[in-house]
Image (tube, rainbow, N blue to C red; front, side, top):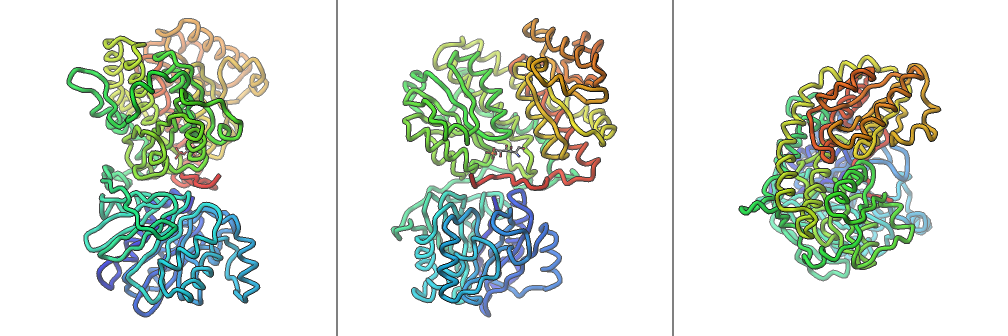
Length: 618
Ligand code: M6R
């Protein structure tokens, strides 16, 4: 969950610190309760770390004016072991300043190791699991005199998931990193090299990267990058070029990343659709390197994901079942793995993840592959674990998503799963070619429609500000509107810390109606009247039932739906869109509402309390 940066450069100057702090700025979404840097200089290591947000560390660095350095480590923390204090912040020191390390993950056997080290006379300065690794590394350095060899000895003692980066006082132009079940990518510069929890850490400086595999150790100097496995054998990781635009990771004039990313959505959808159709008008998904015969044999699809990504999976289920006639289940990744699911070689598992590093989803992917299923990853972050471990990857091209709460990645995930559904329908012949083309044409029109919805944001923001003191909000939807309701509720919980629940509208009378009382705010996602007649009529009845009990309804409905205006309190109209694609236009108003209400409450919408963007522990 923490963010990690490493840098080594050719000269002794302030660049290592600048790169580390700049990288942390881009990785803050991974954790933000404390931060620190270690600078490697010919005169020794220099560590500065502070509890609180990165600005506090930046102020401390400004005041202390640290010495010029040749290498640096940076860390932004999401606390697991030990409260967010200066002492528990990373880097941690071993051997009285001989080495410094930063860590992401959890060292599961830390208690045993701590006792063992304490028995040897080691005095601990923090409550973290990480510090045991710092002391083990220092001891191994004493024995081997070599930072890489010491790292190999250290990781051999650790159980759990970890990324570790280390510097030592006698090799100020070397950074060593290790990874097991926790992310780490290498950035290849010109006479300088980088490490990061993900590519956002260094895209400002280089787009050339290396994908590190499980259980590997990397040793970096300004001129070289060498990778070995935990047994010390040299390996050659796959190089790749990052296609993200570095400018996408800055606010670009918006007050927050969340506001910017909401506005990025038309572009995220357009880029995810780009280049998918060949000259004959057939949908091509070049990254889907799974034998067509295998895809034709698939008799069940299981989507695994967590949080917002799982809601994208819910939307996918409606579309895939309708277009492909393949039974499709959606399962929270952490539940999937532990319930002994029926999965075999004819099962296609679709793992959806923005970060590609969600541990619950990684474990579900591993479990599915162990059972013989093929796995397609729908992922936004190149170089991450899930696409590397899956049989094929379908990338969303949303660009870096920095705000912790997901917005543009959600719409890009939905778009990518539509492409997957259409591709399978084309391959298996469940849709005619002209039907596939017709849906693709509708999809091509979506970015403009989403742009229109966002252009109408003032009205939604006004509404949100007028409700800044509400206590609890319900969200209702039917069919594809149901996962949109779930996502609307999640956004409000995450951003505004308001109790919110999403329900299938049909469920209202089975219990949730007891929550309806005068003054309660209820959002309703109304299906198109041009879709299934019954759906529209039934949701309108739900609205009347809510009105009758004195609650206040805010409905998201399609332009031209005059009937809804007669029953709803407030109507936010969105452009007419085919039923299955409607989540792409009905979601943004709910994102904007949550974002503005949180802002009105004075909350930090980019870094909501207690959350981390990338949940890399189970
Ligand atoms: O990186 P992932 O898409 O795998 O993350 C999954 C969830 O942790 C994520 O969607 C989470 O629910 C966000 N906070 C939603 O805004």
